[in-house]
Image (cartoon, rainbow over all chains, first blue to last red; front, side, top):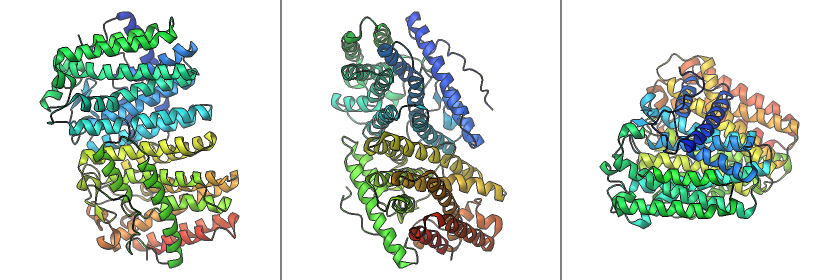
Length: 311
Length: 311
């Protein structure tokens, strides 16, 4: 059995380079982890092994960047983190975690290591990993329907999440990513994969935070644009890191993309051009933030921190 | 590519014995199939192979009993099938279809035949089947959030579906079912598996139909009770059929439960007692319907038709 005590902060492995930023991300991570544990503990009469697998996957030391983005966007708009934003952030993390659990399966990326520990199907078995992923998806929508007080807000949040992660979003990105192995990649294909697999979930996180903060239309649109851009930048950085970093540093198997002949930015345009594109996206994201100054400091730092990952 | 024309009615294989009931179920099936096709066609920019797998799985000639139950419950309450009920019925069917696609995977029940055709992972591949299932789950919540006009209704429907299918519902039932292979079954374990794996989704279908019809509290409670009872009866009938029927008749591999040493009603209490329990459940379900007479004729027929399956 896994203890249900507070999750220890991940050490070093996932930290970014600005220590002040690290501390702020760490604060948000604690909020998200506590919310996830609380929501999971509220589920009654769950099969024991399923419950154990859910605790295991949700307690893995993830960065929680998408969830933190939602909390920060709520804060930038309203000056505080609302109860709704905490639920929304947890829901995003549940869907993201499902995508990791299913992505790691033998029939998909076939990975043994995730967030520094054995993947769910390695720690348990394949059937449990399939069901745990399904359970996380369903739980995400359950908590949004159950704990968001205002139905109009709940419906907007649910629609954002389902559209971003669904067939016309993340799932198509994962599908296209799998098929792109051993295929001559193009920038157009990369753009489709990165937008769907990663950037739409970042945009969704920003959108959900904005909704919880009570954003006006133009604020909402701007935060969505910011989210999409840093999402694209994050995925490029991730591709570059896979080439340059060691497994220990990543907490997952490094160099896997190249071995699988995946369609990545470095493979298609080279490392140098990849870093340039990431820099352009971060710069554009910062420009979008002008509407919110002087309150957007943390979002500016996030854009830059994601860029730092590539160095 | 699969044609998007209207789905031909399944011939014989899934029909029940009362021809008038068959015709009524067929009418509802046509509504559900049309709604599913329309909702799928509205998804834009979906990866081509993913789209093909979704069309394939949703066009498989399923009985659509859960969806029909939702439509009938709406009709019993309000005298008509509302637009909301059509969306709700389609959403239930999407979640149910996901559970079949994932359940058939090699790591789960490892089945090659479903609804008379190759299972999704046989027709495509495992990765596609995993992602198609995920996409169907997300799409179910998307259409509820997007197309139900009244947010309070949408939130109630989403909560019902997520709770019934999630970790404290269907997923725990599937997990317990998998673990029950080669284990000495008890009636208590069977009750847990059947309630979670099957009956909660039947109750959910009744609940969603009742909500769409504008049911009062006592009407809602009664239809939930009815749904739970026929769901339990349906699963017992399914277990009995697996023992008694041929694969061709079932549209899926017959006799699989026994070969897998599954925990089923016939295995634990014998065929005769199983038929008795199914009969008791159908009778109890009919008693619950008294509140709705004389309008509950079709629900009475449904309870009896499910029972007929055991003969």
